[in-house]
Length: 157
Image (cartoon, helix red, strand yellow):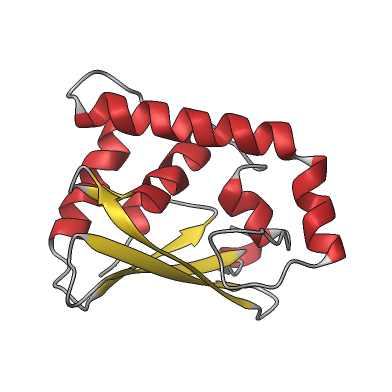
């Protein structure tokens, strides 16, 4: 919150889409606060429960990883794979500067999603549970909205 109850616009508004003819797959679109639009890959849903990129969002937020995928995307990073953006010099420089943190965030997200999928303890379990409930309510062809910075309680179908 900034002053007197006004809300700051999120750095990214993200919409996760359940593919109509393949509900076990998802994609996403994101819009930066500056107006830039990015589309993400068509990917299988991890163990049939929540999209992997949605799990990344929860993990990066939980651990305060501002230089994970979503934080870097919000800052203008461009990636060689996984999005429809053409990589730019500035966007690649953002990734290069934070490559180690990006890799750490990726490993951490996979680790915690795997722990949760196995029913093992993880501090991100409650966020994953909320996301699973929200995602399971999304019909094929439907979508789920989230933001970066992320708040699992603010996810909406």
